[in-house]
Amino acid sequence: MIETRTATAPEIRLRAAPGYTVPEPETVWFKALDGHWLNFKHLPPAPERAVDRGPVILVHGAGVRANLLCPPTTLTLPAMLSAAGFDVWMLNWRSSIDLRPIEWNLDDAAVLDYPVAVEVILQQTKRDTLKAFIHCQGSCSFLMSMVAGKLPQVSTVVANSSGLHPLVPWPARIKLPIAMFALAPFVDWFDPQYGLYAPRFWPKVMDWIVRSFHHECSNAVCKHASFVYGFGFPTMWNHDNLDDETHEWLKGEFGAVPVKVFRQIARCVAKGRLVSMGDYPEEVLPREFAERNPELDTTFHLITGADNRTFRPAAMKKTAWFLNSFSGSDRHSFHEFPGYGHMDIFVGKNAHNDVYPYIIAKLSE
Ligand SMILES: [Zn+2]
Image 1 (cartoon, rainbow, N blue to C red):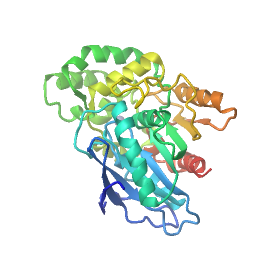
Image 2: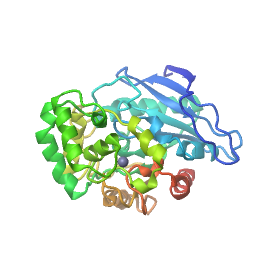
Image 3: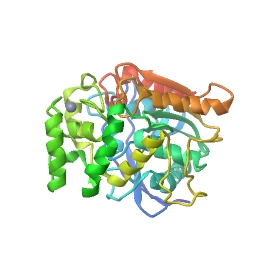
Image 4: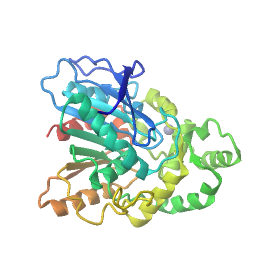
């Protein structure tokens, strides 16, 4: 039995789906395998739901938090999942800016966080299986944990933007090793908040570079995120997909990511597939994740915005092809959303019409 601590979560405020109420959200704390405290923002199914679809875990990307799934002005994915009958568990894993800062890489999350997180949900819901919506580096590390055989209870996965093959646009492929060579020796963390406050010499250098090249908007955190996470003006979304309040709100949703994570991403990008850093024995976490049959019963749906400038849409297509090549069927799917980028998939002002119904349909299969 895993020890948990539960409290109300008044900071999670969601607009209800038409005809449904939003249940009282709560925070469920638990310890990862190394004792680091993690939590869920838990949203039970709406009382008016027609069916019970069981638990779903939502996994955010690097240096953000569960709250990123709850933009302030729109109908959100958690609220729509709750209305559809899902028991929604938004994980704050070790990269979350809501938690005590700790150095981490994808290996740590795969080994230490997700196996316990999944067990906590199954323990709390008294179910045997669950489903997952995973995003970006949360997707990469969650998939590593799955391929390592640590999450056999996950029956269906919808993965956004990043799969087993992290292919990036060619300017980012050139920029990433240059940034690692020129900047990484001098800082331990990259932080989009340097756009608002750059505390030392090298963060100030980064801010000067960003100010010199990024003139696409007046949101300093948006521009730093564009510099750090790919190549674009902006990188993370199409500005047309965001309303002004959400664009401003995003300023508070990005924080620091250890440089060692970018070293791992650079290694994965160079190889064209996910690899571990070898911090754990091979029997705990393999070195390779996309070289042989992962032998999983899980069904995967790989999605991305067609304008994704963090990872190329071809990356998700390749992972779907790779998984289907072992399945003897076409049960794993790939879908791209025209007009969307990397993250507006779930913070976009029209995502509740354009994207969420697709995600909910795939998680309901
Ligand atoms: Zn912007």
